[in-house]
Image (cartoon, rainbow, N blue to C red):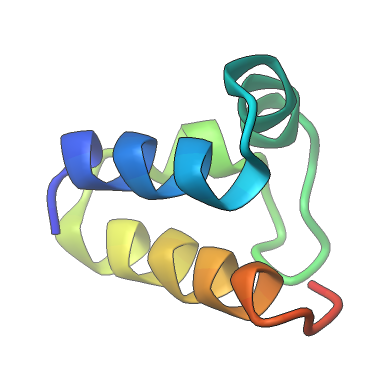
Length: 61
């Protein structure tokens, strides 16, 4: 998955661009970092995608 896919998925998950942007820039305990800082490698993009999946299905992340 590429960064564009994460953006599309994130906006879909949060239903709002602003909420998704806030989430990207806040430290995430499950990722041990800000999600925005992890969008540089394919492995980390997959990790962010996994967290978005959890949020989408109502699992606290």
